[in-house]
Image 1 (cartoon, rainbow, N blue to C red):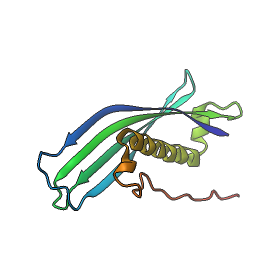
Image 2: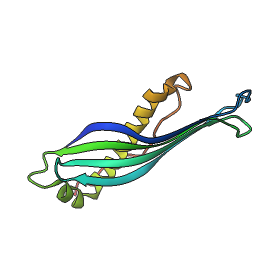
Image 3: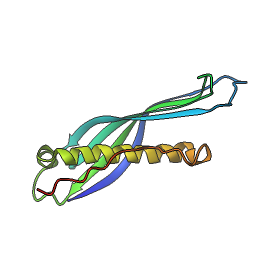
Length: 138
């Protein structure tokens, strides 16, 4: 079975900038990508996941320099499901559902990195971090 990432779209988004003259020493960054709801589109066999993103940069006194809150839409398609509908394939395989959520979080992190050019802020900052657990072969 193949998982195809078809598209990533940014939905509603809120960006805030700190006031003029704000101290930019002791910068702290935080990124939270919350798992989104999963939707099935039976007409075109697409799977939609809608994760939420919160990214914040603050100074050492916790004064906000920049913040972004956004909802994303990540579209997938499953290939090679042996005649099953996506609903059947997902219903029988919770590990596949978890993998789709993981991939949606990675895709959103990459999209955000490109949008904000975060590599210029801190190249060592991980955008997303997760743990891979090898499936049990039995």
